[in-house]
Amino acid sequence: MNDRFSALKLFIRVARTGSFSRAGREFGLSQPSASRIIAALEREIGAVLLTRTTRAVSLTEAGADYLARIEPILAELEEADHAARGTGEIRGLLRIGLSSSFALREVIPRLPAFMEQHPSLRVDLLMNDQQQDLVNDGVDVALRFGALKDSNATARRLGTTCRALVASPAYLAKAGMPRAPADLAEHSLILGPAGASANSWTFRRDGQTVSVRVEGRLMISVHEGAIAAAAAGLGIALTGQWGCLSEFKSGALVRVLPDWQMDSAEVHAIFPAGRAAKPSARAFAEHLALEFRGPEQPRR
Image 1: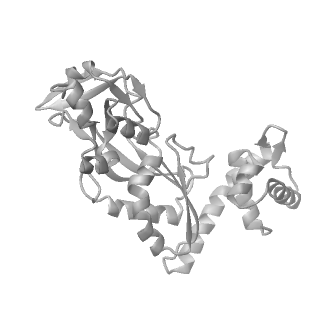
Image 2: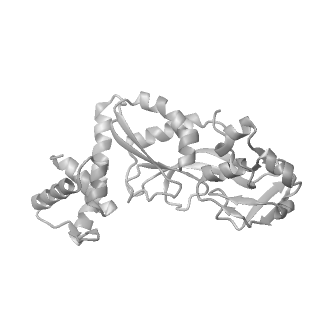
Image 3: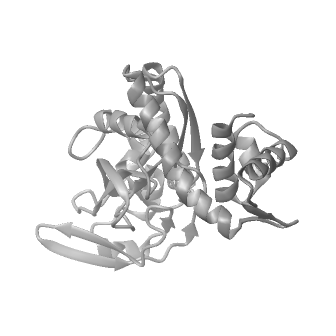
């Protein structure tokens, strides 16, 4: 990596991650190599862009101003390259942030067709059940469920999934099937990512709305863990129907309170604010939108 364009891309990642080591790994470089490239860039510019200490790397005032100016320029250059080719060919690296469960169950099975369409594109799946910071983590597009927290976010709606309560037949045979939302107070509830942040769950039927207080005996931070716990008979879990289609098909899980509706959750492709979305990020969102066609669930 010795050209100016690559050095600028490396500088952006060092600035955003605050680490030569982490940024270097993204580019296949060692920490000393990444540091030397940025030092050479600073000499060429004639300004110190980063303050280096034993604990952290941070932007100088000049570095912050430089970052704000070059980041949109590089994005525009990539867009210009894509337009100039005129072939629809997409190149480079696409970094996708998404939960591990959604990646395993819904996205990875749909990747082969997308990557076959774009053979020059490299894809980095950042699978994490904690939401990534799009800017600092260098995410080109993130897939997220639920209401958008930032009304100014650049986003595209990809589909909708119904939320549902699920449990194993073995658990229900022992504890009994709830007949109404109020019966959940007598059951073991598993709080996973889909419902851990709520103090109550809301149900609707025939114009009636009922909310019940949620007190889980078991809390799990990863969706796959919550589904596995439900399948193991540890209680009733809240999930999106996208998250347990295979368990429904096998009979490992069944719906609880199927006559009551819960709020649905939309899934969006979120793009970093403040700059144009990468052509590859837009193409990926378009691919998933076509795959997930249907008013409530993706194509099975």
